[in-house]
Image 1 (spheres, rainbow, N blue to C red):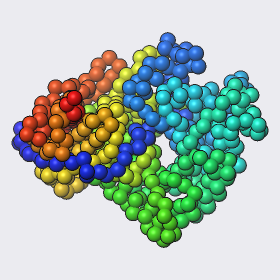
Image 2 (image 1 turned 90 degrees about the vertical axis):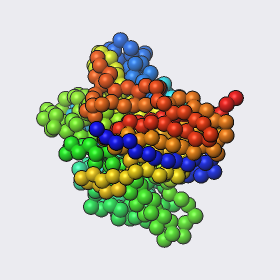
Image 3 (image 1 turned 60 degrees about the vertical axis):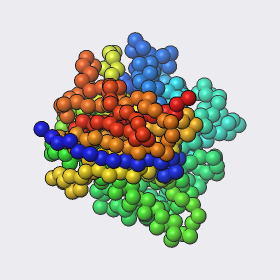
Image 4 (image 1 turned 180 degrees about the horizontal axis):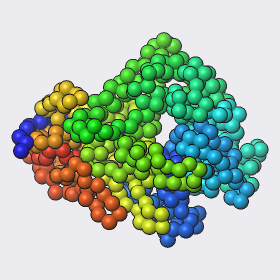
Length: 504
């Protein structure tokens, strides 16, 4: 039986961290497992659109309000020839896809994905192959996607049935090029030179694009953060963002330490910011480098099954993690890490969107359903629009096997001045102790509680399946406001969304 603890917060509209770029609620679709085939695309499905996309999946993606989706990889992009995925279907080659050792039929490519993204109300974040290819393929793909007409590649696009350009504005210069597992792996010097030359050529084709350079594949890479420094030495004036990737898991079944892993994530973000600012100072630059956290999630449940997969089949089940309740709590905490550095983290992509380490699962020919992590992702995406505020927080701290001085209350605050709404996201990380939270909101006169959403479950390992949704939020939270203060009860290991709005 846990004890009741107390936490206090003060929120003021003048304590602004930064404007929230909605693209921090982005996601990722790679040609991997059943993300594309059986995920977003299944022409024989009962819900399929005329283009072959699963409407039931599109509906769930729209529920999440996903603003941008990274494509087509991922490790896969480092061996991908984009020309294989355009033109008449019957002419498209089936290729050995070396990153995940499957057969890629190329039924879906650049044009189909751009069409799907439009239907999902999302932009495309396109990645170019800097593993086996380079400047030439990148500039040609950009011309194919964005040039209006009258050139070889824009006219080729039109001949494929897409007269209007796709106008893709965000481009990744390769993927995880620091990783020895990557096809065409490079040193930081090699990658920095190639990324810079590719960026220069792409900007000549379309000066309006934004470019993302590859940062480290995770915080534990032996080359981190030297990789970022060297890469930015070459690319600082040509790119707009540097990427971060990080996945977490609870392999040791130490749930207390697991829910504190965002302390590491915060350190990762701060180190990359410091490295960017070091290069800025070194180059006497006036430009600020922003961060694109374009792969993040929980990933560890499926690794054993993945190691037994037979190679060279089309769209086998891969990386199909079944998420539990504690995973949902960590995902909420990871999203709050982005809000806390909204001044510098401007894009992020939950990897991935459907079937592959994803909030949405499907059965081929069957239903689609929401995994546990769907809910915190949806809450922050839908209600986390506006400016991020810096709350002053007093919370109890505790130690775990892996961490000392863990704050029991993890929180982020979003204020939308236009809609006159204030949203407090909160996680009680402690597995046993409940928390009474008192929030000073005197800076928001005549605001009232609109809703208090809670995600809680007695079983940290509870999961959602197609037949049984054990983990879903309710709106029976007890937050109330009086004398300029909000009080609310946070049960042990629980996720909260307290929404306030101005009285009309």
